[in-house]
Length: 205
Image (cartoon, rainbow, N blue to C red; front, side):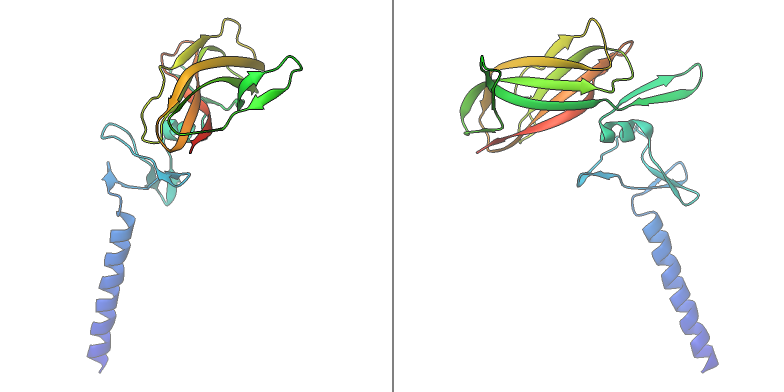
């Protein structure tokens, strides 16, 4: 009876140990560390073979700064001389209108009939911008993930902490049903990359 109990305990310990090992490495390993999965707004963040994925180090989850910056829709700058990462999160509020009347009233735009083309204006209110930028870019992505327009780039000659921007868009085709995403991106001084800092949706029905 005692031998049977010991054997049962040994089997149970082996099963539990195997389960723990399997669970800890379910997403694989990177240079000896277990990989964690990053899900942003119910979408799993994919990492390429050359990217450093989220890791579990000494029981703590360590996120790559670039992935975190993208998830927060912020701007990232690396100063190699001081080994310092700077993260900036500007407030960017977008709204769309098809018309601006003389009495200053606006006609909001957010729903369009499928198959139609539309002219509308993207208004962006920016504040809390703690770094300097040289341009912004507006693009639209269809429900299937394709670019709908050639991205519109606006140069910023005098970067300020707060400003308004108006970007007219003409002949935008809404050929699919579903959610179109308007993306507002910024390019920092000294960088060749654009970072998306705001998104807003248009529904095609």
